[in-house]
Image (tube, rainbow, N blue to C red):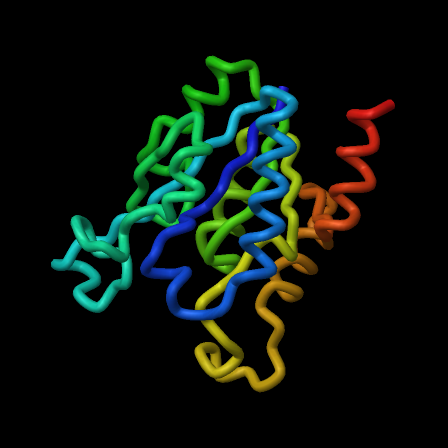
Length: 183
């Protein structure tokens, strides 16, 4: 069984940049999982004012709210306070209870919550598929003082080079997983 993990589609992140392309791909992937009656789990990252007073996703703030278009499509919503969807959450129990052995990861922010959750899933023995261009980040090359850095490509390359995590672009996902569904 498969599950789609949608990392942090929250107002505080999504209102910082134009994520039209990423949101379109994520929506299509969610629809695929819903058609196949596979589990869709949406994460909501919450920061405390004490630890991260300038966070766009502070506990109780409007920025911490999940975009309504995603909230209604979730089979489950999991709140988390760390980059990994596995740490200090009940994700492992949910996946085990649903006989999930393959997780797909999309969402925000690529280099934090998406990457950490992918690595944590692999460490727990799940087959992990990371759909690179269905992730996005509010950060830029200037954030990391690395001119020309393509954050998504860097994270996708690192995960791909591990030979542990399947990294696909959206078109490759469509070809491999939608096509296999029709066969």
